Image (tube, rainbow, N blue to C red):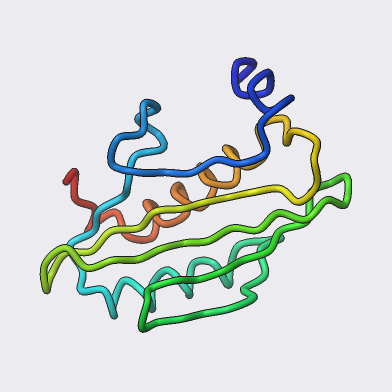
Length: 129
């Protein structure tokens, strides 16, 4: 955690992906169609405290959120959902803080919070890859 805070002194973005070095930031896979996953993700996000859905584009699989930090800074978070097969889909997250200062690891924590909530709700559908 200290490492993340130190990185966050200068960095104000964080994202997930297939090749993420940190295993906690790897793309999440679920045994659900993209449409069903979309409904579940929107439902989970709406129940999460502090996150506000700004924009939804189901055709491209993007959900744009905003979150305010304790210090009043805004963070823009984009969830991208994509179909792997008709019965398997994935979620990636990109989180960025507005402004020039680092985020002290808050974008990393946002991603972990979102993934943890999704994993809890969708644990029966979670797929290792």
